[in-house]
Amino acid sequence: MPEADAPTKNDKKSDKEFYVDVPQESRSFFLKGSNAHDWGMNNRLARIFNPQSGKTVMLAFDHGYFQGPTTGLERVDITILPLCPYADALMLTRGILRSVIPPAFTNAVVMRASGGPSILKELSNEQIACSMEDAVRMNVSAVAVQVFIGGEFETQSVANMTRLVDQGNRHGIPVLAVTAVGKDMARDAKYMRLASRICAELGAAFVKTYYVPEGFETVTASCPVPIVIAGGKKLPELEALRMARDAVAQGAAGVDMGRNIFQAEAPVAMIQAVRKVVHENMSPEHAFDFYQSAKKQPRKR
Ligand code: 5RP
Image 1 (tube, helix red, strand yellow):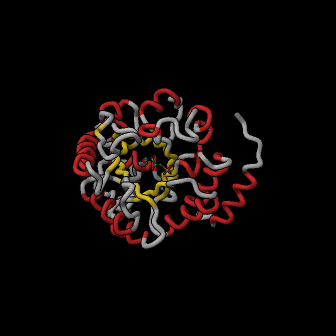
Image 2 (cartoon, rainbow, N blue to C red; image 1 turned 180 degrees about the horizontal axis):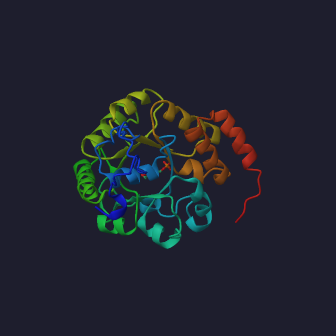
Image 3 (cartoon, rainbow, N blue to C red; image 1 turned 45 degrees about the vertical axis):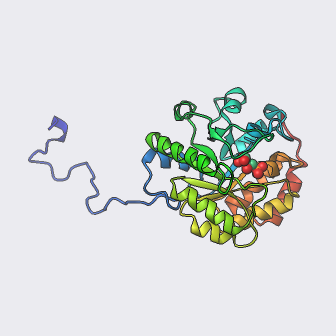
């Protein structure tokens, strides 16, 4: 025993405090279905989802991986960079991450790891488009993979996901399964339940689906891991805020929104308004008032 720690005859009370009467707390992780992950994976999830609110506002701008420079994403450096500080996580491709996002940016990154076909071809024919080694090198918080339940290449896309889950588990990288609804499929709760449940059963750490107005709470209830919603096609701003509120009220753990933010009339004001709904429980109407006044503020370049 080192000299300083050795008890002496005259010692009445040690200056050390072991709190012997206080049992160590064993806390559960704040995200549903996520207790059994390793520390590194949960640490990454806690960078995507805010541990205080339990929710996330992800900004999706990975559309170029199959659509090219779609409206609002012609110049990511000009239109998207000003939004990044307001996003809990950026959802993007490794090409944009390396070419446009400054490495000093420290919010979470969810990196698209599947791809292949363009809008000119069969979209479900995707393959894994990024190695886990490269994802680790870029210090991402999760990888995202498209899953086409009911699509022509359904099995291949599910296999892309399960391979990424195996590789991600090795490195502590969570996998976000993005459920892609084919053009001819019904976008309803029955489909979303089927798709999201398959993704969770096969190992996705969290799942992205579209919001459906009828029965969305059954989608979140039957999926054992967190669900975030895609924004979908551009809506009027108040409607988009209402959709975010409805989704969160019905069990979503946040949004992964693209066009409804970057195609808004005032994207910086819009992402802040979405945050108010998702993280602060603000009503969509109050968040819309906030948006209207924030959009009048002069923007710094
Ligand atoms: C592509 C994606 C996109 O990231 C996402 O769905 C697009 O977001 P939004 O619908 O809000 O524009 O996963 O399939």
